[in-house]
Structures are given as structure tokens and as C-alpha cells.
Amino acid sequence: MFDDRGANHISTGRLPDPDRVRSLVDEAHRRFSPIRDGANSSVYPALQQLDPDLFGISITGVTGNVYDAGDTDVEFPVMSVAKPFVFGLVCEALGPDEARDKLGVNATGLPFNSVEAIERNAGLTNPMVNPGAIAAAGLVPGGSAEERWETLLAGLSQFAGRSLNLDEAVYRSASETNLRNRALAQLLDSFGTIYGDPLETLDIYTRQSSVAVTARDLSVMAATLADGGVNPVSGERVVEASVCRYVLAVMTTAGLYESSGDWLYDVGLPGKSGIGGGIITVSPGKGGMAVFSPRLDRAGNSVRGQLVSAHLSHALGLDLFASQEFRDD
Image (tube, rainbow, N blue to C red):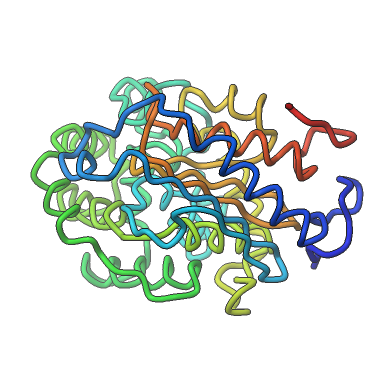
């Protein structure tokens, strides 16, 4: 297990010195606070109620050190940032081979709620996009839909290191307006690639998306993937180390939907976004980063979140493809 002490060069496999990390996080918050590009998601009415100027950055090292700036204690709906963690729970339960056979792992190159992605691949997509994630919700262990939901929520809470709760207002808003996801669930059923009653499974997925989290929660969750499945704050093992490897692989292929290539080109790390304004980044062996800012681009990804992730990936020496540190300023 790596730690996050005492180095500032990529080849050491550590985060820089804590004072340097803290300084860089604070600097990034000041630098990108003036950005006002993008707009709140219009997919669900409740997302329009988020203050568009909220902005928080949190990094958690694999030793459990946490570095925060801005609105890191404000709760918001996790939305699609839940997807890698639910996929991890499914891989843990079924094994990675069966999970791939039932869900698919290839990038679609299409928007997150694309019908074409299902038809093109005979019902198999990727657990980072809506169809694959809806199917994944039906594979969480449990003898009933309610048991699967309880298992799922408990698993997300283990990743966060605290008890997470459903945002009932967001859940109602999403349930009343998720017509596109209902169509996706029915289409998956026609291909035999949804593993349970389509509407019950969709309800689990909708609840999953409506869990309330903070930027700090997400950075701890991301750091758990970085630390081989051990939550660095609670010390609890959530999933096996091998599972984290498969989760990071699918995050890399489709974590930011049709802009995943641009993300990897700019950031050089596995990432996952959500239309609630959250973005996570995972640096294996080093730590996890989360940004919360509700203003999104056309692909549904946080504008500030992408800018901060690229900047800090470079400044902290995290980019998996860089042979030496480099900066973007």
C-alpha cells in the first residue's frame, strides 16, 4: 500500500507533501471559482434547484489524509457517479467475467442515455452509461428488489465511510420524469439483458442515483478504489483489490461518456461524472479526487470539474501517461 507523504515526483507512487497538496487544492479553488460556463442539468427538475455557483474540491490520500477547499460539505445527488461503485459491488458478487458477459465493457461513443447503444450491441453496453448501469442494479445481490436496494445503499455507504441516505425529493422528481430511462429498461428487456422486472430494476437505479453525497464523500469513495478496495478513512475493506482494477478499466473507457477520450487526453486518469455536478478521479495507489460544481457542458459533465481535474492531475504528478511532472499553467 502506498502512502501520500513526503514526495512530489510521479515516479515515487505517492502524493506530494501534505502542505503542497493543501496549497495546490486551495490554489485550484481560487483559480477556477470565476468560471461561470455551463448550466445545471435539465434532465430532472430537482437538479435545477441546485445553486449553480456551489464549488468544492476534495482529495483523499490512501493514508486517509483529506484536503478540502470550498463547498465540500454540501450534499447533492450522486447521480451517475454511483455507477462505478455499484459495478464494483456487482463484480464482487458475480466475478468480473460474469459481470462483463451480462453488462458489456466497451465504450459506446454515444450519449449516456442512448437507445442506439443498446441496439448496436444486442443489449450489452457498459456499466458507466445508463443502460448498463440500469442492468447492473438488477445484479446486486438480494432476494427481492427491496433487499437489492438495501445491499446497494449499504455498499455505497461502506465506500463513503459513513451512512448515506436517499434524497427523497430528488427521487420523486426523477421517478416522475425518467421517461427515457423507462424506455431503456424496456428495450433491455426485449434483448434479455435486464436481470429482473424492468420497472423494479429501474426503481433501484433511480434510488441509487438519488443518494445524497458530498464532495468529501466522493473523494473518500474514489480513494477506496485507489487503495485496492480498502476505505482509507474507516480502514474497512469494501471490495477485493482485483475488483478495483476492473472498475477502473471501465471508468477509463466510458466514465465521461462520448467525451471520455478528451478526458483521458487532458487528465490521464480514470474518472466518472454525474449530472448532479460531481466528478471523481482515481489515481491508483495515491488517492482520489472529487469536484462538485453543478454547471455542466453539453455532454453532462461538470465544466469546473473537468478543469480542476486536469490542472491538479498535472500539478500533483498523477497523470498515468506522463513520464515526468508537467504543468498546464
